[in-house]
Length: 424
Ligand code: AMP
Ligand code: GLY
Image 1 (tube, helix red, strand yellow):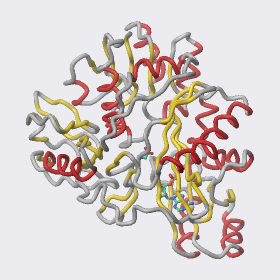
Image 2 (cartoon, rainbow, N blue to C red; image 1 turned 180 degrees about the vertical axis):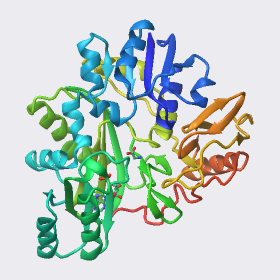
Image 3 (cartoon, rainbow, N blue to C red; image 1 turned 30 degrees about the vertical axis):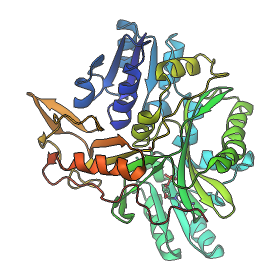
């Protein structure tokens, strides 16, 4: 089978790397890919942007691709799956209508509320006066969210009414463009976060191992929110009984609700959860795999990713199970100086060719330039490792990071070391 992976980040490198290991895969194409995917055996980059749906369709036809797997949210929300299916080309991911679970926070909240799935209390606004009144009437800490896609940056966790009002004002006044013309204000939850990702075929699903990411840029969970500075699996605070609760109270009602609403949800579904004293609650849905959660999860996955995704795309997941490496895995993201606001790009990265069988260096924002690898995005690399313990995986990763040189690069030193890793 020929597989096409759409995207160019660390998530796509990890998915392509895993797919290429499948005996079912003759070749894995990545559009557009990065310097890391370009160097992998059995993998080839195609110079097509992830949002150029017409060119992706042409590539899938010309290359006689058997299955396309979409990495990032933008093409999903733009309807890539609808367009591929209209052309009779198998493509794994939700339709544009179902991808609104990620594409519109107000849609997701309305969906959760209507189907009785636990989530923070909320209200939706397009009008500043009404938002101001709501904040006055509901004292306490709030989170203000731009309705549309904002690359993980459209969420402000506010400590008090003043900060919430500032965020609401900025968003409604266009700080996030159209994405913020509508906002969701919700109650601020406390607890420990976890990511729960499943692969669904419209009816059945398999659950990947749990994971946890670090969204803030700096050590101690300080600094600006980012796409994710590191992740590990399993999550620190999800034991087997809690996993059953998450499946029964969140994942299954979500898939049933989607079906009842007329959506045939095929693809990855990511529930971002807050584990609170009153049980797990949904913070957000993503209609795709997480980045960087994919990197540690793919290292732990022993099952054949091509067999799984092919089964999901054809509605044949029933009875499928996952074989998972019991060892934990951890990924630390190396980012360009200035990330996330204004990353400096174009610098040479040294030390990538060091032989190290204990770690895998997944590329994200990299490109090949006359035999050299240079940075081309805010998140540049994701160094990932398995270990007998999380601590051992950490040691492997940080040792390897010490051998990589990118001028001014930043990475967190405390990935996998949350002092608050127990749930309330
Ligand atoms: P989201 O994009 O909705 O997942 O929000 C990004 C991050 O903001 C989450 O990972 C949480 O750390 C935080 N967050 C979102 N919603 C809430 C909430 N209701 N209470 C506390 N923190 C939240
Ligand atoms: N790591 C969070 C995300 O992929 O949205």
